[in-house]
Figure 1 (cartoon, rainbow, N blue to C red):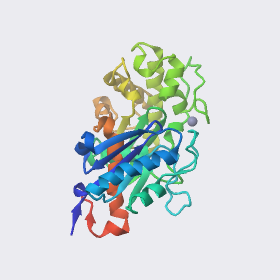
Figure 2 (cartoon, protein in one colour):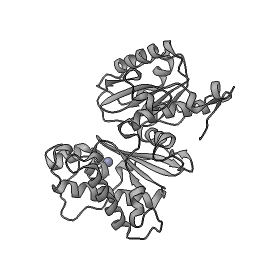
Figure 3 (tube, rainbow, N blue to C red):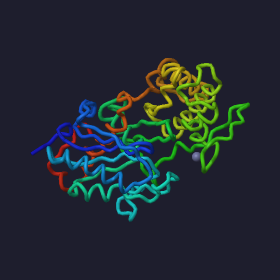
Figure 4 (cartoon, rainbow, N blue to C red):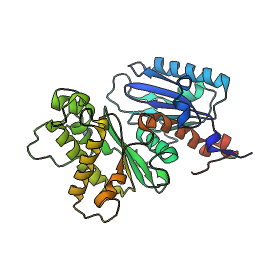
Length: 326
Ligand code: ZN
């Protein structure tokens, strides 16, 4: 029997620093239905939260068996299969969460079904590759800018993994002249995340991003630094598209369109026509740096995608599943 990817009924967990979004389904339209999704606050007691997550999926599983679960997690995480800490959140400063095993208890709690596990950004990137703005592209970068900054994506059709996983959110950037803001990263102060995450904007402007007036200098710094960072990413990874998700890109009173316009312009100015591609020159950049097509569901859809992908790798279903388009 051949099962196509789109027929696989799976679970997905978008494990974020603020909340865990859980869903079941086969495709993005399924996760829009309230009966197919729920949310739990992340809190500081992983054991208690994981039990609630397992109970929710077990109830869904009793109605229709899940082929797999995908977990797209905040990090840092251990993605090295065979490592004693595989499936763990490792060194996070988030209270209660350092060295937490996510994959183990969830897999055991749901009858040892296959569990796909990756970073939140690789997950969201895979979701955009299956159903969104990275469709048909084997080299792209997915960036999220929210509570923190992370980036993942694909090179040659493979999710970006390596020594650990990319940590582009902690790139060091040139400082904009006149900007004395010290930054908020506990490790590096003024790295990209330290300068541009939601908490950084709050500290810089004294008010959350959604309430900052459009002409406030905080937006000028924000979009300029994002422009520097994307220019660096273009120079190192040569992605065929860059997707920016997360809450900050909505840019409150400035608006998403003006935000993207400024970022694109800064990327072009920084690269200064050096990288020769129609995607980066002139109007091509409007299709090159874009928001996620899946919008706010990019993360949870990405988790579903990780579950479906795991079915092509897991021995128990490898022979019966043909992953169309992957
Ligand atoms: Zn940092």
